[in-house]
Length: 107
Image (cartoon, rainbow, N blue to C red; front, top):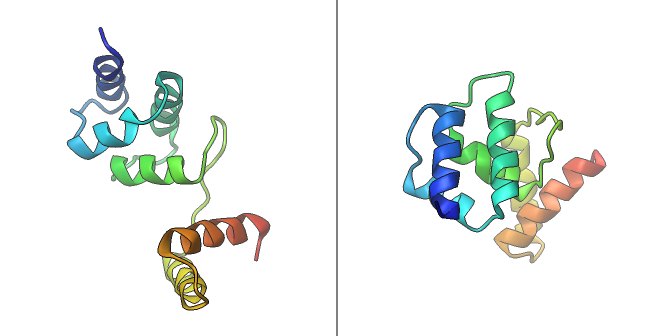
């Protein structure tokens, strides 16, 4: 069994659904161990994950670790902060990273 077949099987176990192309693409760039960590976090989430692709995308971007509880964020504030960084000359990706960093610092 190759890595992607194993990741697909782990996804099926974690969610009881088939992985979409987007999910396969998100997980294909990660190590097998990291993919399993993310799927475990998704499985252990206290609330049902309604958008697995969004959950995985955010977990990858923000480098969530097992045992870390995702924090609820206000998307309006998050988007406004990102737009401010973009107006100050950052690229959209740089603005996103700066927004995440400012949230972690508590600003």
